Amino acid sequence: MAKSAHLDTFAKDNLPDPSLWPELILNHPTATYPERLNASYELLERTIELVGAEKVAIIAAEGTYSYGQLLELVNRISNLLTSEGVIPGNRIAIRGPNNAMAVAIWLAILRVGAIAVTTIPLQRAVELEKIIEIGQIQFALVDHRFTEEWNLIKNYKGKTFVYGGESDFASRIDSQSPDFKVCDTASDDVSLLAFTSGSTGIPKATMHFHRDILAIADTFSKNVVKPNKNDVFAGSPPIAFTFGLGGLVIFPFRVGASTVLLENAAPPILLEKIGEYKITCLFTAPTAYRAMLPLLEGKDISSLRRCISAGEHLPLATWRAWFEATGNKLIDGIGATELLHIFISASDHEIIPGLTGKPVPGYQAMVVDQDFNETKDGEHGFLAVKGPTGCRYLNDSRQSNYVVNGWNVTGDIYTRTADGYFKYESRADDMIISSGYNIAAPEVENALLMHKAVAEVAVVGLPDDERGMIVTAYVVLRPEFLASDAMSKELQDHVKGQIAPYKYPRSVHFVDSLPKTTTGKLQRFRLKS
Image (cartoon, rainbow, N blue to C red; front, side):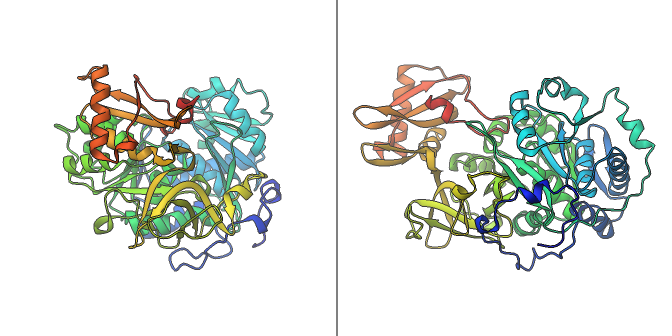
């Protein structure tokens, strides 16, 4: 490791022992970096060298910012932070919606050599307390609309800055100099703590370096999204979520493109903004693409050239429906907070509907069995990945569960085709074993989604004395269809006609909605309790 710029050594002191790290691939031509590197400088000054200071960087609720204006704002915030006692290595929480100020704050935190800890606005005090305890947060910048929950936190002893509304934050940064000397961070200084959901227990803090932030742009984005300076990015994931941080901030800024940041990106609003701002690159989850389908009539989405889907499994039925309605091939991808972003995907002519894709250039992947032997093509196993990014949990014994023999083991069940494509089967804990048969919940969900009455569905295995487990479907019907025994039977017969009959749901429950995380991921475990 290069000499750290961190005066506060908390992050370095709590990295896992190097023997527990995954093997990192650091020599890929598009993802090789010098020892000294600050990601904020690379995403601003370096980008301005490419596209000029007048190029539009952000369109948001607060207005439009050029790259030059954004740089000045980031420098003013950086000066304020240092005047308030922030030193390199301090952990700083950000709590707010997707807007220009949140991005400027994030860039300023990296610029001063501190560590950004992004939080999702919908998180409650009890969840935030766990983040504060694990990350030992010392400073926080909180949007004025999200202070109520923050003020309920019991274990935070640091300094809070409220921004927006009637706060004095704007006047305080206006009084600062627009010039700032960027902290001379090492490329492997920690820049970001990204927390996993933690829905079923204590969350894990994943630690990412300055070089990691650039690596996801120089691998997945460069080779799969293939953006250029004329692109306009937008999407629904919060930038507190690594899928959103990459897709809405890092990727456009790396090439000098523009990003439209929406504080509310519900499907109807997202559709309107595509036409209004001529959005070309869209990032959202499969459920959002499906929700937009019945709203497409009369909407101008002709500007779209890239639609990226991640955050949860993309059902084949959703891929087909979007393609038939728009002519746009959804780019599927699997990523993980532990690796920061997407590592298996495909675009353009390389897309095969129903398959996730191939390892992104710079990454390697394989499918292994319980004993970590590589499986034969077509056989189910655990997905193992390595590349320029990888899992480093902050002081967490679960590191050895995720990293095995130098590989990141994601907890996903996959098969590999003879052509080297990877096909998602299920999460490891979503595999249903019924009467000795292995049944992947997503496969049953996809079959149900092909029925015209089904809006959303979740499939789980529930205990059964006779079969061990039975396939159970929770179905949200479209408004024009009614729940009934006849509809249940119709759906069961439909599944039998789509996939092997033994996989059909023996129990069907009609519900008004499905449980999801704040980032839109389906919470199947809540349906099992």
